[in-house]
Amino acid sequence: MKLLAFETATEACSVALYLDGEVRERFEVAPRRHAELALPMAQALLDEAGIARAQLDAIAVGRGPGAFTGVRLAIALAQGIALALDRPVVPVSTLAVLAAGAPADGPARILAAIDARMGEVYAGAFGRQGAALVALDLERVLAPEAVTLPESGPAGPWQGVGTGFAAADGVLGQRLGADLVRLDPAALPRAADLARLAAVACAHGGAMAADRVEPAYLRDNVALTLAEQRALRASRGPG
Image: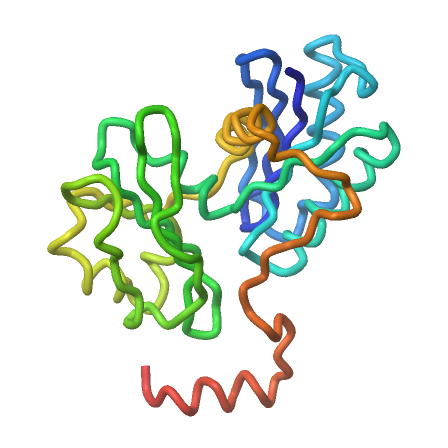
């Protein structure tokens, strides 16, 4: 299986090429440069591997949640390439991608959190069951003080990954500290992990027509006006 994967939902821009189990990746923390970097990264990976676009079996994409423009860019790139090649797209949760990158020697239960700005985080709980990664709860956008850990999934402690743990002065990690034996508040989703998840999903029927792919913003209103943002902050009080 040959997959090209795009993950641009956060400040990190990454592209990966999956070749029958081997993964090659380009990764750069480059806020506001994703549109400039993503396609050249993809072409460089294809050229180095000696693979033509026509040889790809599918295109994988991190569907969010994350920054609105970054999520929209990744979806547009994946759809454009897939439609041109008449190939399917494999959409994967960006929170799942983030969780997949958590250290393998850490706890099997993983809370992935991305800073959603405006005093909120995107949060998703996942569990490792052998080589599989399964969602333990619905993904949500909410204030960090409102995040709770589900009781389902593998037994034992948790590990936390993602910039949501650095948001709001680290309140999420402070609240859940007793349950977290490992924490990486600087972790960002990577296309290499996306490619591996997408390969598994594709093998189990997770690919779909490009025009059916939809982003996961989680917020009903992804573009609050400045007045709405000020009102939201005021309603939460100081801090």
